[in-house]
Each structure stands twice: as structure tokens, then as C-alpha cells.
Amino acid sequence: MEHAIYLVTLVGTALVVAAAFSSLIAFRFGAPLLLLFLCIGLATGTDGLGIEFDNARVAYFAGSLALAVILFDSGFGTPLNALRQAAGPALSLATFGVLITTGLFGAAAYYLLDLSWLESFLLGAAVASTDAAAVFFLLRAGEINLRERVRATLEVESGTNDPIAIFLTITLVEVIAAHANPETHVLVTDLFLGFVFNMGLGAIVGVLGGLAIVRLVDRLNLDHGLLPIFVLTLSLMVFAAAGAIGGSGFLAVYLAGLIAGNSDIRAVTILKRFQDGMSWLAQIIMFLILGLFATPSQFPAILVPAVLLGLFLMFVARPIAVWLCLIPFRLPRPEVAFVSWVGLRGAVSILLAITPLLGGLENGRVIFNTAFIIVLVSLVVQGWTVGPLARRLGLIVPARLGPLDKVELELPGSAHHELLAYRVAPGSPVARGERIPRWARPSLVLRDGRSMRFQDMGRLAAGDQVYIFVPDRYPRLLDKLFASRAVVDPEDADFFGAFAVDPARSAAELEAAYTPGLTEAEQKLTVGALVTARLGGHAEYADRVLIGPIELIVRDVDDKGKITGLGLSFEPTAPVARVPVFLSAGEIGDRVSAFIRNWRKPTETQVAEVRADEKPAAPEPTVEKATTES
View 1 (cartoon, one colour):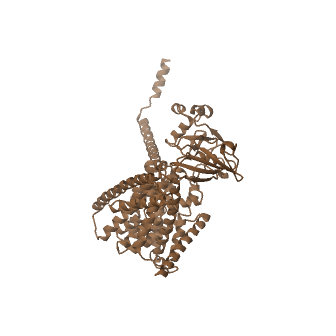
View 2 (cartoon, rainbow, N blue to C red):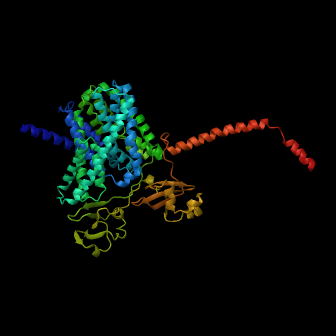
View 3 (cartoon, rainbow, N blue to C red):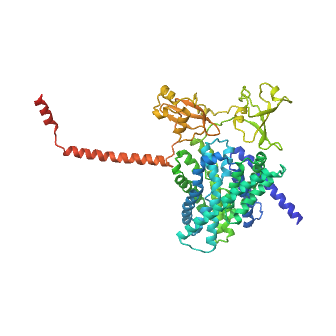
């Protein structure tokens, strides 16, 4: 028994270490990290090194706990401004998008696999949710600076669509396991009522749990080493409590993290670091266990239909669902196309595919193997193309900041305050003499191994290390002051225009200088307000507005979304690659209006010609009459 403990521990830790080392390969070559983790699990499983692991309950239990940890960290790291910016599109994708994807994919699975209708929809529900961890790892590994609206939409969708897919999957498993064959309207009604009850309870428990976590952390004077463990345990309690009373534990734990992360919770820096590490560990454990549970020797029997279903999901089901859900939000076609493509399937889909095995379904293993192959196809095809597609669609923007060397320290007993340590980068604004704001209190400067008071240092120089005491919700202005200039790609050298424009200047000056054709109402606005209005009321970093012969580019916005810097270009950049599909509601309306106008014109012309033919020729008498009178 003792030898077995050592052996299991040795094998388990070796797998985790191998997975950690594989992340270096992924960061170096931009490979999908999840794919590497799954491959390690497959290589050490039954058909690889021979490690036997066929316990569905243990796999599902461990995967569920790991997913709860990941969702709490995801909510904790989601800022409210991202939620406000992308709430509408993301929640539409997370609800109606999952349902549409399930329906379309289920219909295709019914004709390609030997499954019943309910089993086909069950498979569709299992693969209907996206895996945000894989997507954002690829963005970080490839150093891709996406437009904020796109990034926020993907982030919020991925955090909120898992609970809905889990509810659909578990409900369908219970219906099939009970050998029920309900009528369609009865099944839809039960699903709707169960969904409202499940999500409603989960939301209530999540909100109350998040508020309780913040309250307990602020009230209890726990040691900083114990505090992160305490918060993680409370989050798992929220997850378990919601599930125990029939609610969605996954939605509850995500909302608890969202509320805790956006409150003035104590020791937020320590909590973020700890949760980041725990999230990595949870992902590694979940992916390795799911890889170990799979049996690749069973894949050839269903390989062809599973690959076809994976391609159908990527090129048909997901794009249609995304387009239908995003029609009301008037997003540009390139953004809709990118969101539809970055629908990577991952560990959640494999985890949900285990539930048919737990329910004892006859085709449970077929459903699991099919879902596993679909995930592999998604990661191989979509995982390697995220960066190139983003560049092709023009969604990459130059980085705001260059290299920044910063350390966040939290002092014991300093409620809602942090100690930031910056190293002055060459070429940064402070190195060029820019003053530090009054609300920031520099306390110490290290130079050439000597420590001195900030007041005695004079002008800061490159290489100095400055310690600044600030509130924990400090403005990002400090990062801009201490960062070096961002290295702009040669292709983006003219991205922000050759001239700078003050957003506070009157738009009438633009009309006087360049005659872009502004209306009288627009001329009464400031240039910044004009750009914001042309963009639909919300300006984003790197947004562009073409007005007559000039193009205005948003160079920067503040924390409240107000434009603080504009560029002007006389040579607008080449248009972004046009996407032949994904029309928005506005574009559909414009095309319908144009079609109606073009359809009426020939009709009106024909009517006019007919009337002209029927009309007697009257010009001659008129001319004669005019001549006689003259």
C-alpha cells in the first residue's frame, strides 16, 4: 500500500511537470496549450504507456471541481467595463447561441451517426460551449493585441455559456436514461422552466456568495498566507451550495468571482496571484485526466463522421449561431467573423461528454469518443489560425505600451493601498522629465545600489527603481508614465495618422480646414464628440472614422471611455478584408431599402413610358398657337 502511494504520487507529479514544461513549447511556437495537455494524457493512457484509468465518476468529479476553480478565476479577472461593453452580444451568444448550435449540430449528428434524435441533441449540447482558456492563451502566446470589444465579447461569452451547456446536457441525459419519449412541446416547456429555475437559483446564490466573500475577507483579519486558501474554499462552497439546492453551481461560482473581483476586496494582489496559479493547476489536472480517460484505439470506428461533424461545427453551426445572435448589435462583419471562428471546443466539451457514461446510456462511449475527436479537430484547425485570421480581418491594433517593469506589493495593515515598484525604462515619459501625479506618493528610489528619498533624487533616470504608495484602484496613468515607447510594426507605422488633433477643438474647425461635409449640428460638437457620435456612442482605442477626405483615428481613451487623443490622416488605409457573409441588421436594412428602390424605379419608368404613349401629341398646336399670337 505504501509503495502504491509513492508510485501514484510519482506518476501524477511527473505528468504535471511534463505539462508545465510543454507550456514552454506552446509559448515558443504558439501551439494550443490544451492540445499538448490532452496529448500528454493520451500518450500515458491505456494505448500509450499503459496507465489504466477508466473511472468516469472520478474523472467527472475532478473535472467539475477544476472547472469551478477556473470559472471563479475567470469571473474574478473580468472587469466590469468589459462586462458592460460586451454584455449584450456575449449573453446572446451564451444563451441563444448555445441553443442554436445544439439544434443545428444535433440535426447533422442524427444523419451522420447511428444515434436517436435525443442522443444527437445531447452530443450537440456537449460541444456547444467554447473554451476561453485555449483562446486567450493563444492570444497571449502570439502577442496578439485584439480590439477590446472583440476580446471582451469572447471573454464574457466563455464565462457564461458553460452553465447553460451543462444544464442542457444533464437534462437530456436524465430524459434519455429514464427511457422517456416526450412530445416536443412538453420537452421544450420542461427545458425552459428548468432552465429558468436552475439559472435563477444559481444567480441568486452566486451574488449572495460573492457579497459574503467580500464581507468575510474585510471583516476577518486572516494571515496573508491563509487568505487565498480561505477565498478559494468559500468559492467552492458557493459552487456546492448552489448545486445542492438545484441551481447552477457553475454560474454561481462565476458570478461570485465577478462580484469579488470588482469590489474593494482586501489583498486583491495576493488573491490574483494565488488564483492564477490555481487556475493553471486546475487546467493541467483536468486536461490530463480527460486525456487519460480516453481510449484512442476506439477512435477509428467513428473517425470519419466525427471529423465531418467537427468541420460542420466550425464552418456551419457556429457561424450561423453567431450571425443570428449578433444581428441586433450592428457589429462589423470582420468582428462577427472572428467571433464565429474563435469558438474553440475544449475540456468542458469532453467533461460534458462523460455524463452519458455516468447515466448508463447505451451509446455513451460513442458520444464521448465523438466529442473528444471534435475537440481535437477544433484545436488543430482553429487553434493554429487564430492569430493569422485576426491579422487578416484587421482586428490587430498596435500595443498601447512598450515594455514595463512593475511589481505590485501589498503592505500588511494598509487597507486598499498598494506599494508599486517601477523600474524607469529608457525613453519613458518620466525618463524624459514628465511629472508624477500628486495622488501618487513616491517614497523611495534605488539608484546604483543606493536608496534615497524621492525628494532628494531630482530628475529620474533610466534604470532607477521607484517605490510609489497608491490606492489599490490606481489609474493606469502610472503605467503609461513608466513604460517605454511601444515598438510599432513597420506595417503599422502610419496606423494613427501623421497629425495629432485635439479632441476638445471644435468640429467647425475641421469643416473650415478640410470641408468634409459636416452638418450644422455636427459642427457644434467637439472633434472628440463628433468621432464618438459617428462610432455609435462608444469610442475604442484604434477606432477609425472616415469623414470626407480625412480619416480620424482614436489614439487613446481614458478609463471612462472618453477620447483623449486623436490622429488625422489624409490617406485612409486600405479597407479591411471584406467578409461576404455576417451582415448586421443595419446592413440588411440598407440592402433591403436599396433593393426596393431599384425595384420601384423600373416599374415607375415603365408606367411613365406607357402614359407617354397614350398621351396625344400636344406640342404642335401649342407651338402654332404661340406663333399665331406672336
